[in-house]
Amino acid sequence: MESSQPQQQQQQGPKKRGRKPKPKDEKEQQQQQQQSAGKTKEGKKSQQPSVDEKYTQWKSLVPVLYDWLANHNLVWPSLSCRWGPQLEQATYKNRQRLYLSEQTDGSVPNTLVIANCEVVKPRVAAAEHISQFNEEARSPFVKKYKTLIHPGEVNRIRELPQNSNIVATHTDSPDVLIWDVEAQPNRHAVLGATHSRPDLILTGHQDNAEFALAMCPTEPYVISGGKDKSVVLWSIQDHISGGSIIKQNKPGEGNDKAAEGPSVGPRGIFCGHEDTVEDVAFSPSSAHEFCSVGDDSCLILWDARVGTSPAVKVEKAHDADLHCVDWNRHDDNLILTGSADTTVRLFDRRNLTSNGVGSPIYKFEGHKAAVLCVQWSPDKSSVFGSSAEDGLLNIWDYDKVGKKVDHPSKSPSTPAGLFFQHAGHRDKVVDFHWNASDPWTIVSVSDDCDTTGGGGTLQIWRMSDLLYRPEEEVLAELEKFKSHVISCAGKP
Image 1 (cartoon, one colour):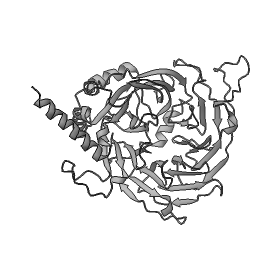
Image 2: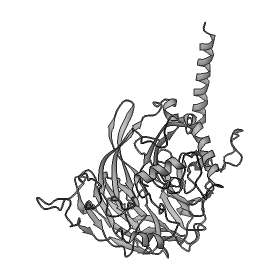
Image 3: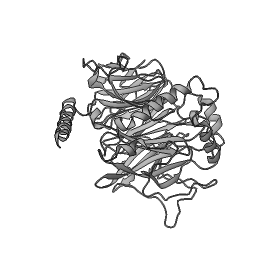
Image 4: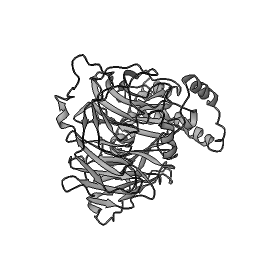
C-alpha cells in the first residue's frame, strides 16, 4: 500500500482533500512550527499576513463568541473526525468517545484513533479559560483511549447510528472496512507492525473508493462511492448480533493473523455518474433512498426499490466538482451540496425532475475556496455548517435568508443566512461533526500541511448561546442583567 501511495497522489492531483506533503518526523515538524511562529512562510508572503490578521482578530473575540473552546494540536494530519457514543454524564461535563485518524508519512503506520473527550457543559467554562489556549498544545480534554493500525490512510470515518461503536472507514482501496472499535484490541503503532484486522470487508467497487461513505439512520445499511463512478449498497444486518459484530475468529486465533474479516458482497450497484463519486447520503426516513454527488457536477437521487438507475439526476448542480452532500434529518425534502465552485446550494427534491432540470432554492456564497464538508445541525432544522479550504467553518440559518432585520452592527457584505464564522483553523478544514448528545457542540479538524509543514489541528467548540437563542429571550435576559446592575449600583 505505501509503495503505491506516491503514484496515487500524483494521479489524483492537487484538488483532493488533505493530499499534501507530510512531515518527515516529529522533530522536523516541531522545528518547522517554531520557525513559522510569528513569521510567514517563503512564497506566501502576499497571502499569509491576511490569514494571521484574521486569526489574531478572531482570537481576541474568543471569550465573547464562545461558550467553550478546546484546541488540540495533532502530530499528523487527520482527514476525518466523528463523535462516538456518550459514556458518562456528570455535573459539569460529559465524557464521550471521539474518532479521528492519523495520516502519516510511512515512518509509522496510519491509525484509526479512539479518544475519550471531556465535553464541558454549557455556561461552565470561565472566559479566562476559553481565551487562554495554546495553539501548539494538546488539550487536556482529549485523551487517546485506543489505537487501531489501519491498512492504509483513513480518508473517511462513519459510525453506525444503530450502534456507534461500529464504524466504517475508507482508505485508498476499493473496499469499505467495518470495525467494532470496542472489541478491537489496542495496538502500538510502530514501524513494521501488522495492521489491525477489520471485522468485515465490504466488496463491490471496481476501483478505489476514498471519500464517499454513509451509514443508514434506519437500518444497518452502508453506501459508498468511488472512482469507478458507481454507488454501492450493502446490508450488514446479518453480521450484527446484540449490537456487536458476530465474531469469526477460531479459538486461540489472534488479531495479528494475516487473515482478514469476512467479506460482504453488495446488495446493489448503482450506475449513473460519469466521473468519481465524491460523497453520498441516505434519506433520513428510508433505507432505500439515498443521494450522491461527484466530479461530474451531478446530484443524483436513487431509489433501490425501483432499480439501479438514477431516480432523479440533476446534470449541473454546481459549476465545478461536487465534494459533499447532506440530507436534512428534520425535513427529508431538503438536500445540501458543497462544491469546488466555493458555494453551498440547497435543493428541494420536490422541485427536481427526471429530465435533469433542478434549480437550487438558494446559493450560499460565503467561502473563498472549495467547500469540503456540509452538514445539517441536529439541533435546529434550518441550521447547517460548511467547511472549506479557506480555513473557515461557517454556520448558516436558512430561516434568516430574505428576512429584513435591522442590525446596524452587521456588515452589509455579510452573506445572507450566515450568522457565525469559526476562524480558529489556519488551514483547510477537511471535516467537522455536530454533536448529537451535546447541543450546538462541534468537533472540527484542519490539515495544516500548508501552514506548518505538517500536522493538524482538532478543535472542539460551542458558540455562545446568545448567538442562537431566540432574540426576544436574549433581550429579556439582557434587561434582567441591566436591572441587576442598576440595583447593585444603587446599594451603599
